[in-house]
Image (cartoon, rainbow, N blue to C red; front, side, top):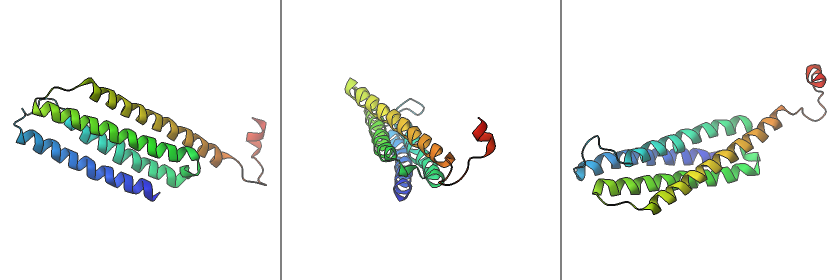
Length: 152
């Protein structure tokens, strides 16, 4: 559980710092206010996908002991790799936009890989959650199932 706590805390700091970077970097480079850049998206991706989602997973871990599943370790590392890769590409692409530089298809490809990692991580999370739910609903050893469940 500490791993989730520290990761969520790290994403909170990174999210706030990326928002500060976005504001100051655009001002420093006289980037027109209101014009789109992906720097603002990095701020929200880090706070939402990193900070908030991992706090929710921390609560789920507390209730369902998700980490008892081998899938949970895979979820943690694959999902976090996806958040980091996706956010890094948003910052890279956004910085190039602010500087007036041309972006390459490589950035989009790497960002797509980050999104695929995020998706794989979410699938693993739901698989681990499903196993934990089945485990929590199973009767304990020596315990009889209620009559309504036996008839079904």
